[in-house]
Length: 208
Image 1: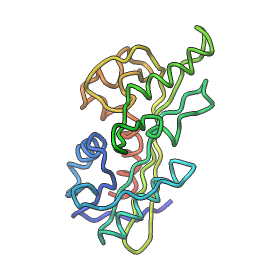
Image 2: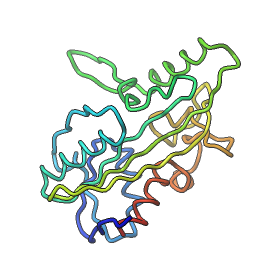
Image 3: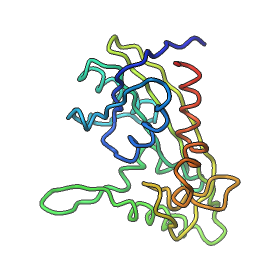
Image 4: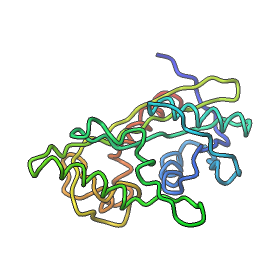
């Protein structure tokens, strides 16, 4: 399959998630790309109406490229838990949504991790704790063309949460073959083995 090549220059990272933007910047550092986040540009966050990671990644990439006139890269990622039928999946971030005060919303990842653990605990001590992080990258150009790449990282869930180096559900996810959670692993090592790294390896092979 032939992919369109991405020329060096500015690229919008279609995200307002600082942790995600930081990881993507690190992964793009050596390709002559000047990443700028949608948050830095003040671009609005589109409503994620898709029912798959692919759908939502494309929604975000097309919205950022349309608003900026620049190529845009969007990441839609989440946690799929086998014993929960693949949930939370595309609703991974929604499970962390909490009403704070006076209508303000925020994300409480410890609440989200607790929700997953609570649902697993309901199934008893022998519940299957296998899970996978999934990352879908959508790269869109102002003319409407887009390329999509998917990565996965298999592992298992632990409780209680461990580590302070990651974000999101990282403190409860142990990647296959490791004994530490994503949040206990040095970020450089995580970049090399994560679901995002897998998707990026495919993107790099395709568009650079």
